[in-house]
Image (tube, one colour):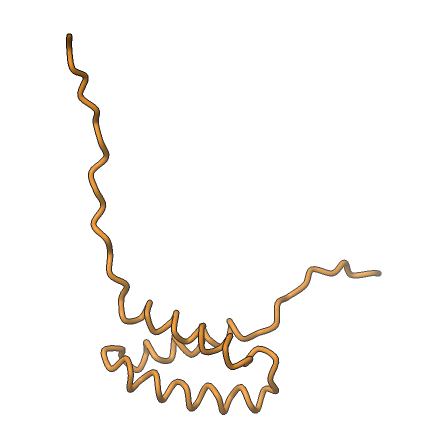
Length: 89
């Protein structure tokens, strides 16, 4: 009797999320929990100003450019969904 060797794929090491990944995920959760998507633009600006200040303190590893990118991602995430509507001529 011969034994067949089974070839297994090497185990992948679990990758820890980066501080930017963690901050992004947390920001998106805050946006959803706080109903930022349905609020007025002035309220959104105020909310983002306060929240980004908090995020900069919480994720001190992030540079100012990272915080700015994070805010931009959050503002895009908070935009209402775009719908594809046919344009009538």
